[in-house]
Length: 277
Ligand SMILES: Nc1ncnc2c1ncn2[C@@H]1O[C@H](COP(=O)(O)OP(=O)(O)OP(=O)(O)O)[C@@H](O)[C@H]1O
Image (cartoon, rainbow, N blue to C red):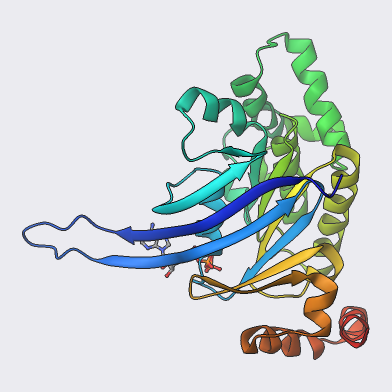
């Protein structure tokens, strides 16, 4: 399954700017510059770079949450940038996003169950209440939450539980491709590992393809098949994970690697082994 390409990004560029006016001078900012990469079906592709390097901007352009200034994005061989609204709407259920702080993405006044259900109502037309309730319970189970979480409110959940609920909300519409935008950065180390393991299990169960966005290489060796390193809006290095750990070509990558090699405990040991292969 891993030989077929799901996503092909070519020369992707984003310039942010205001239009300017009589009193405010026009200002432009090149956030992403001519970035190209491909993600195969079933693969986990890591996009790594320091704060402000353009990772989130790329993730949002890929989902067409913001428009690209230049370049092309092909999903299953079709250019999504030229898709009309109707066609794009259909595709939206296939492509979902998980944020760093899923807590803030939940409405504090609605129950977790109602909110997991929301995308199903948007994309699928079966409005039978029993069917919908069962679907949410099934999704809660898939992410390791008990059925009684249906009636809880977001503030009653821990960070890890909220992230599980966020994953359930994304998965209920049966996506094929998930952008994971720093999905575990806000969580404690032990919870981090649980969520990453859950994502690995779900990938196998539902044949998912991931674009994993992170600002360092901490989890990459464990989680990603391939890694692209971004610096100041440009991709400076792309390689299979093992290759990148063995022979980082770029100075920025070397620095990112040396910072994780000083980690304590099992995780540090794991990285040291990876880099010694
Ligand atoms: N809406 C916007 N308008 C203007 N500039 C923006 C906008 N969004 C992002 N930028 C700028 O674009 C650059 C890339 O931002 P982006 O958020 O994509 O980086 P990032 O690598 O995801 O950073 P972080 O890890 O901090 O989230 C930054 O310099 C940022 O200030």
